[in-house]
Length: 268
Image 1 (tube, helix red, strand yellow):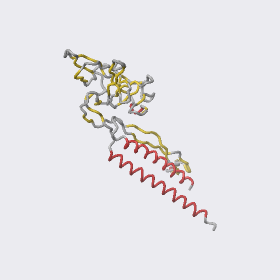
Image 2 (tube, rainbow, N blue to C red):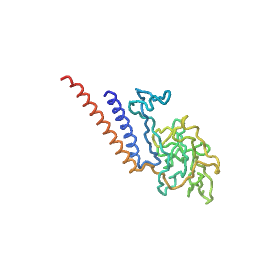
Image 3 (spheres, one colour):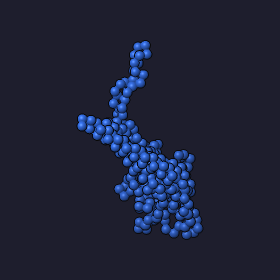
Image 4 (cartoon, helix red, strand yellow):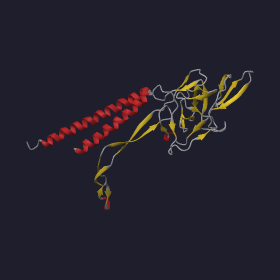
């Protein structure tokens, strides 16, 4: 009975974590560029009461006797499928149609990566820099800050990230190029809040798009934002499943407790 109590309690803890992950997905259903997560679990060690084995002439134990000790959380896997594109018409709202990431520089000088392309213009003296909503610098293909000079109109951003604008004489000039990065294993990125991801040893080194012929980075769409890839109906089904699993584990604990009580009362 003690084994049953332990196994059921580990199931309750696992489903609580599952609920936490699902709740976070639902909370970010309208977060630009958010990627949903999924909790993964593994069974715990088994007590082997009888090993499966076969002796001479087919005699032995064709099947064994093992009892498990419950479940444990193993990982939370992030799904990087693309979300729906929402047209905004804003000049500096950008979406990536593909697997790439925008590169940004944080105040401490470290790089981070994002799918959130809701960029803004920030004034730094006489410079007009392209930044995120938190004021982090958006980086170019050369990993430099992107500056939009004053006086330029009709700013256009191509699918390759090339920024052009018209000067006071009506001539079109190149103003910079937005950098795109990719990873060998995006699932290995570390989410650090503010719609940002950090590079890890598991994700591999980031690779910057240097030429239009480079593949795997996607293309940029100006005037669009990528919405969350969370599917509300799917998450609600997962929520109900987690709730039912939690209830079943509580029932297992209650039943085990009642059986222990019956055993303790046998001498009365």
